[in-house]
Length: 117
Image 1 (tube, rainbow, N blue to C red):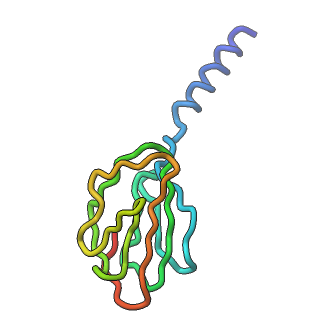
Image 2 (cartoon, rainbow, N blue to C red):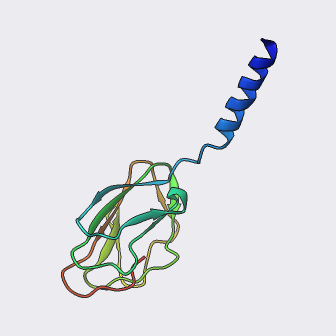
């Protein structure tokens, strides 16, 4: 009986060690056909080679610092918003601290598109 308890404890320890870390982002809203993705175990968001009329909202699930490693949108009309700050063209966010629950909103217009983020 004692040996069974030890084995059960070891099994539970192994299961707990294999649990994935929590995601930093959740996709809370996406327009039909939008290519918005969460990758790398929830640590990256993207919309590569995006289309027209896309809308996506991502919610931060923890306090995080956001920086774009790739960013190219139509300067005038396709934008990311973090709080009241907008990012477009090749000027993506850099070291923007977000609180848990804050959102990143993405909008593309009806015409020109680019390689995305």
